[in-house]
Length: 82
Image 1 (cartoon, helix red, strand yellow):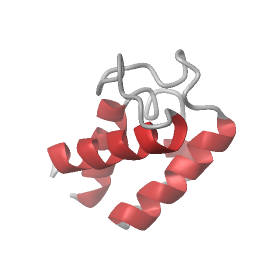
Image 2 (tube, one colour):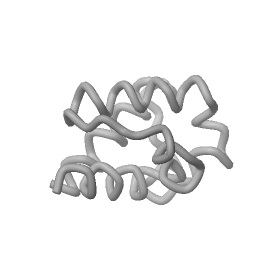
Image 3 (cartoon, helix red, strand yellow):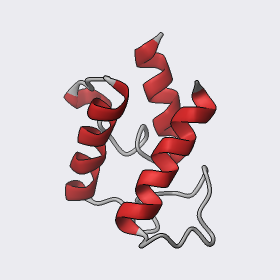
Image 4 (cartoon, one colour):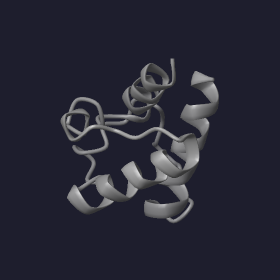
């Protein structure tokens, strides 16, 4: 499940905000530091997670630590699904 979540989230980020160019982007890339996620793209990613995985996130769960990388996002989704 975790690998599937990582793949789906990574693919969504690459196609939505990186114009399909995944060079230099992996599961540990810092999404805020690189400028990939800002407040608007974070909200769009939250909506994607809700729609794709059926996971509703509490506002307190939407923060810089949980949305730091694909890896941390997948861990959050996995924790909500279990």
